[in-house]
Image (cartoon, rainbow, N blue to C red; front, top):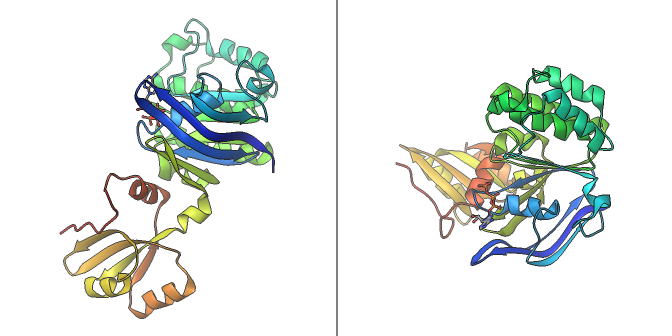
Length: 298
Ligand SMILES: Nc1ncnc2c1ncn2[C@@H]1O[C@H](COP(=O)(O)OP(=O)(O)OP(=O)(O)O)[C@@H](O)[C@H]1O
């Protein structure tokens, strides 16, 4: 599978702040990536380097096999939709879509029109008069209809309601199935997007701490619920991420693969097993606790 982005020891510093710290990863063609992490982790900085908006301080970065800086061959294949995206305020929505059509080689005008209807965007309204959610919807429509070989969405849905966000995920997955391309989605709404993500990159304090297929990641931990004494017997000697107690009951989240033996052992003890959500797992892995240890909630 060919690589769309290859980063080696990529680093960006701002004075004494190391926003991105020796990060190495590859983004493969025709996959949907989640770029996740807490506020200030370094996600936007990475996306800005990939899209040649800022220079790396050190390290190597290839996009479509080339240096991205001032490289129209590379930049012509990228669409970057960001939360703070500013479109020319005097333009009408229809003008902005026409302009996008002249900019993105794979632009699909009919698809853009269908999306305008789906998101109920007023075509004749000037951009300065759009609501915050409508502004975000415009960015999403441009991102989807661009069909750019590398489409990056950085928190694209400020102000967008739950119905519109759900519409975005549905349209993205449908269109991706028909027109495979590489999508990078950066968001804090991990559970909402988890069903569409194929590969997860998690950045924490400038460092890459997870680079894994989403399915494999989901299997990294599980939760067990039951009588406290039985839960504790089951969890003894295992790596505990979190333990909550409610009277005589306990709910413990463990790191580890839920194999057949483990499942059988839990069943024998009469314990309930539940998968952990991607969001829970990432919160655990990026939380401030100095070491992962049991947390008692009494
Ligand atoms: N222009 C800049 N000058 C100085 N520091 C900066 C600059 N841009 C980013 N930083 C710092 O770099 C770090 C990473 O910021 P970045 O915007 O990449 O985080 P993020 O993961 O996108 O966060 P969020 O989820 O809050 O958008 C932060 O500490 C931020 O304050």
